[in-house]
Image (tube, rainbow, N blue to C red; front, side):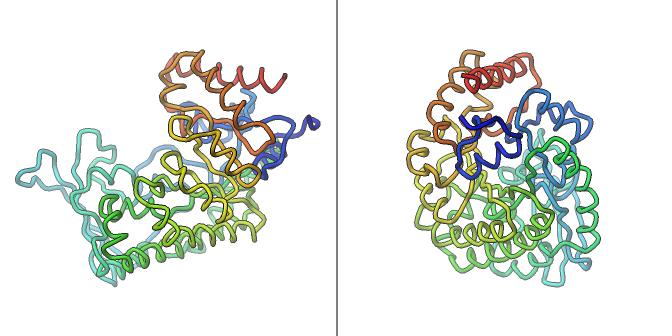
Length: 394
């Protein structure tokens, strides 16, 4: 076994599919702890105290707040200054819930969306621009056809100089924290088809791929160009890992053929940009992606974040990707850590370490989050860490 090293070096070795001193354990998302922390610094330092290979994220994730882009962590999402918005609530015939309506008036036209205000809607009378809650509750999505794309461009504009300067200022303490503890620095988040789910709808996305391929291609190109501009800003900060969310880029919505045609060229360009800037590209995808593994490797993805034992054939993934792509996950967060027994957790840790850890290229984590602040979840987090530590000490 290699000599003991720092957490950052351990994580970098794993990301580069080398064999570190031992397989790191880093929770990809850990809302239960984040919600109990007063700051990003406290959140990171508490993980370090737990023995985890924590990473520092820039810009640091804010607490839950009402804005237009909460589900897209990272740089602010601002509109062209000529854009104005109007929101109101209506009771519509045949609808059980109130309907939230929002209009964006842009130089390219008016965009109009309608959302059902269900009992669990978290944003009051506000309709955010980019949010997972929109997907199942939208009665009318923001972008319905090619005629809406000119207006969309005014909602996806490059970051302003003041926003970039604020990001750089906000990131300095986080970068200092990473240097102090010698931790990995991650940034993002990037986005592609997930944004189409928010503005066009997932069901519509599936039909548009085949019925209006040029419309789909243009929509993805607008998003990719905007996203890549944001990538430049974050990569220039000197991060180790750029993270792109891709929960809606799996085979629930894309066949391998449509993935190669529409999404592969974008992902390949993203990976090339990350590598040119001295970073690595992480891709969050947690289910129904086994037929796409070779495409991910061909595109140049460095790490697949979200290897869920409930949804992945981990042995096949390890065999296919080997020393080409790091795998991050191995334990189910919701079913096992939040709801299972301590022995369930320990067994899943042993399984993940046995299958994925040999020869390196593996980071242990619950997939994709631990959200619940319950005695069982706390006990199971401790069991996960204890079992991992016992296995790495052997």
